[in-house]
Every structure is written in structure tokens, then in C-alpha cells.
Image (cartoon, rainbow, N blue to C red; front, top):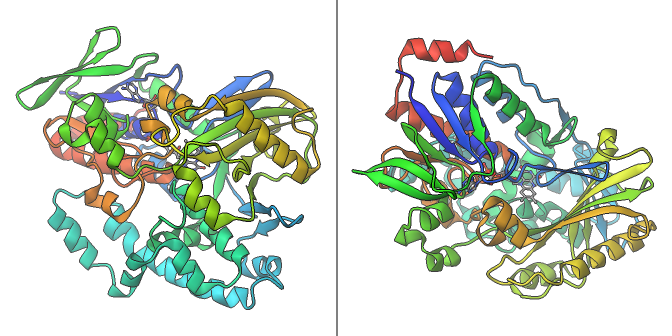
Length: 504
Ligand SMILES: Cc1cc2nc3c(=O)[nH]c(=O)nc-3n(C[C@H](O)[C@H](O)[C@H](O)COP(=O)(O)OP(=O)(O)OC[C@H]3O[C@@H](n4cnc5c(N)ncnc54)[C@H](O)[C@@H]3O)c2cc1C
């Protein structure tokens, strides 16, 4: 008999899991708090402009190929590789650094700044690459039932990598490079994990390998939201029902199993099993009332930085702005160390800007540009009041206008701001944390909230705060891991699997 999955949340984790489950013959129904699918990977359409709300690029593109292949459909996404991968503007330097994938070309950017850059970078990336390949399958892409299993996996990682466990990313980069510019640029990947390089363990130098040597960075032709749209379109063809504006607020249970989830209107939703794509830590606390995840305990956990995002449509083309741009000040250590634990907005903010109209002209009216601006800020534990949001936005726009020689404020056609309160309220992100639980060594693998519930035998989790972690390709891997668990626990007949694979 066909088994039914009820999935709470239509973020990438929920959508990818739905795709895998329908391919295996399971019936799927989905509930979503927001008015459209995608979670953080969302879209705003306003005043003739289209904006992606969150992710603007990703690594490990092969995980998307694997997802669609696993589900018997051709990958409908046109993934475009980025090179240069991004551009970095420093406050005290007019010309930006172009971060090319080819090290010989990249070395020219650092001429007169870092002696023997190419040689040093090759040695650094060699070590990072070895670590990546020694851990990708052994540690990251697997489920853990016990701490012992995790310990055994760790023993399979060659000992030569262990010194990286003792250092943070900044310390590792300082051993390898001399110039502030190279150290700062290579350490930007720490922010992709949602933290500063001073808090991020040196093992994540493997991300420099993924961006520069391994698979690189990609975006999607037509905009990042295509990822959500294409998956939803396949799911609809497969008969999956998605109910929007439906937020789960309570659970019904019976004898160690979930017996249904209750939405904000009191309606009860049922399945044979349940997959939660809401934050795996805060859902356990807020909805399941688990003591281990009480508000006080959640607040003590290590959360990633909160995003402050501006979606800006301007009249005019900005030639010296590229697809992906970082605007940095000249006080990196002091900034990164202090700003994220204070209750004041940064006066001289550091920020990232993506202009998707550079490669997708349909995202902006003719002669206009759409800017997505992301400034990492303290989460709501440290700064609960965002009544100064317009001031911070104008601060950023003035700074960028000065640096680009283009008046963004005068040419502004449309502007939408999401502060950490918006991120919290729209998608239930704990205290507005952008990427969910951080990836310190005490919050990864078997030490992260599990993708199978500790008490209910028919409840699973997928998404940024469960295993393996955050970021688009990692969440796609998470959908594979949770599907393996479900197949183990709720096996269905071969005939049903075949009928699933023959679907659209
Ligand atoms: C500003 C920003 C920029 C980012 N940039 C990048 C990037 O460039 N590259 C990259 O790889 N990653 C990036 N990320 C991270 C990436 O977006 C996330 O890791 C990924 O999208 C998380 O997916 P998820 O499956 O955890 O689902 P989420 O996106 O968290 O979706 C969960 C869904 O569940 C719904 N939900 C929650 N609670 C309930 C409930 N109780 N009832 C019903 N529905 C509920 C929410 O509304 C939401 O739609 C970025 C994130 C942010 C915020």
C-alpha cells in the first residue's frame, strides 16, 4: 500500500525530499507557512523588478545533477559557472580584486601585494582539497545513529588533518599568507557558513578548494528561484498537493508516534510519517516542547549571523558593479570580532551585492538594474530592535554610491528591506539567524540535531539545522540522507517504487 508523507515546509530541503519520495512511490502532501514555496530561496516581484531573496550562488553543482538523476528526470536547471567567482572592493583601494579560478590569472591580481602568491595558494589549496576528499563521503554524506559511529568515521580521516582542528580559519590563513588582502579574501568563505573566520574552524578552508579548484560556483539562468519553481512544477505534475499560508503550531501524538500536526486554524493534518523542514532545533523546542531545546538552551547554542537584506531597483546601468561583489572596510579584525555581538547597527558596514540583471536582463526593466544587498548583522539575541533599519540601509547605499560613483539613492525606483525580524517571522528562522545552527565542531555530524526524531518513530527532519548542514548543495545532500532513513523504516513494495520512477 502507498505510504503517505506529510512534509512541513517547502524550503529546498522539503522540496528535494518530496521529489525523492515521489520517485520512490510515496504519496506526498506539503504544508507551507509562507504564501509561496522556496523558504529562504524565495522571490520578490515588485515595480517591474524581480529579486531572489536569499541564495545567489552555490558550489557542488553535481549535487543538483544527482538529485534529478535520482528522481528519473533530466536536470531542468541551466547552471552557469562563475569566473571570476566574485569581485572584492576594499575601502582604501579604488580597483577591485577579481577572483579568478585560474591561479596564474589570480596571481596577477595580487602582484606587488603577496610574494609568491601562486606557489603559496597551490600549497594551501592542495591541503584543503585533500581534506575535502578525505571527508566528503566519510564524514559529510552519511547518517549517524550513535556517537560511536561518528567516532569510528573520524578515525578514518588521515591524522595529518588534525592540526586544522586546533586552529581557526584566520590563524590558518595567517600561517600561509602575509598580506591582509589575501587573508581577508580567502576568509570570506567563513561568512558562507554564517560566521567570522575568527570563529570558524580551519577545517573549513576546504571551502576555498570548492570555490577555486574543485567545482567552482554557479548560478541559475533565469534566477535562483527557478530551482524552487522547477521542483514545484514536477511535484504538481506528480500529484503532490501544497497548502500555502498553513503554519504548523502543535503536534498530536500516540504511543511514541506522531498522530498528526495542527495548523494555526486548528485543522489536523495526517500522514503515515512526517518530514519537518522547519528549523530542526527550534521546531523541537517550540512545537514539540523538548526541554533540550527550550528557549534558554536554544539561545546558548551557536547560531549563524543574521542577514539584513535590501532589494533595490535603480534607474541606470552600473558598469563597475559585477555579478557578485563584496564591499569591505579597512578594519576587518576589529569589525568581524565586535560587530556581531552588539545592539547597534554598523556605522561603516561590510556587505555583499549581487546584481542578477547582469546575466538575467528580464529581472529589471530596460536600462535598469536590480541589486540584492546582504549585510551580515547580529541576530535578535544581541540586537532585538531594528527601528533603525532605514538608517542602516541608507548608510549602505551612501557608502556604495561613493565607492561606485553612482547615486543609488537618487536613482532608486523600488526598495524592500528584510531585517532579522522579517527573516524570523517569514520563515521561522530562530532569532533571525540566516543559515541556521552554526558549524562549529560541536554542532556538526552526529552532534547536530538528528534527521530522525529521538522520541517519535515516524518524524524526520531535513534542512539547514539538521545533518549535514546549511547551504543549497548541503541541504540537497540532507534530502538524500533523510530519504535513506525513511526507506529503511517505511519500505514500500518494488512495484510501487517502479510506478514512482515512471512518473513525470
Ligand atoms: C540571505 C541569505 C543568503 C544566502 N545565500 C546563500 C548562497 O548564496 N548560497 C547557498 O548555498 N546558500 C545560501 N543561503 C543558505 C540557504 O538559503 C539555506 O541553507 C537553504 O535555503 C535552507 O533550506 P532549508 O531546506 O533549510 O529550508 P528553509 O529555506 O528554511 O525553508 C523552510 C520552510 O519551512 C517553512 N516553515 C517553517 N516553519 C514552519 C511551520 N511551523 N509550518 C509550516 N511551514 C513552516 C518556512 O516558511 C520555509 O518556507 C542563504 C541564506 C540566506 C538567508
